[in-house]
Length: 311
Image (cartoon, rainbow, N blue to C red; front, side):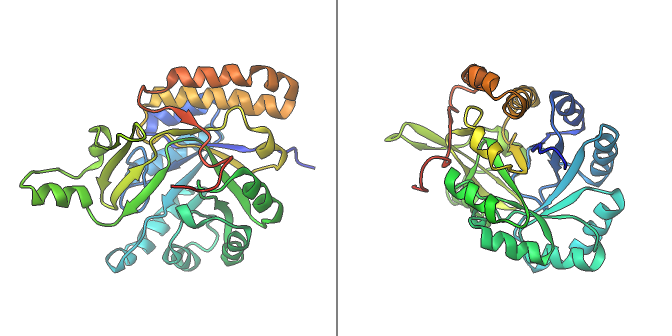
């Protein structure tokens, strides 16, 4: 019987980060380009995807390419060529939310592994199994469901289950360029490109004393959570339920930050699996270590793991 060990999945910013994150303990990587994938920390063009797969496979790691954007008619015709390219590169899975991707993979790369990730709508085991019957091997759970629901989903799921354990989460997306359009109306200019993630645009909520990062790209407007999820000291239930994959999201973070976080989670996961008493002893110190890494305006919390979804 194969020994259970959850996959530690990380989002690298560039090719160099793949090597560094591998050394830190990551098992797999999510990469892609803005045209097809949502909220990726870095842009990997086709040449870089090919290099990333070779590099990761040489290190014994996996690469998943994100194609979970919301597609309109103008991009549907492009999907076949991109899927065929990814198949030729031997990527380990394609992440999708739109059925157009699934149908394209069925026709042009029928042996390609699929991970279903529709962001906020993956909230129950029944729907996860529905997409499993359509060909998905994994369901990426929404960030808005609590621990009890996640455990129940894992118990009844016929597919692998992935949960995010660390990082920012998206609270809102619109296909419209809301901020850019507003600025244009005001007679000002806001260039929309990937660097907007680094420009420090925020929505302020003085009443709650928090700020919500906001950026725009080809997929529209994205508003992110004011805090970062951190579940480093609450891994027991997830591991006892044998969740298949833990994801660290590196959006809006430096490579040094993500490497340090990955190393800490690698230690926590391994201890929780092999030396539970030791994990209990050190988990709060590990949480303190993560707190020290945090930017001043991004405190850590447990997201919706222990509460109902309330906005």
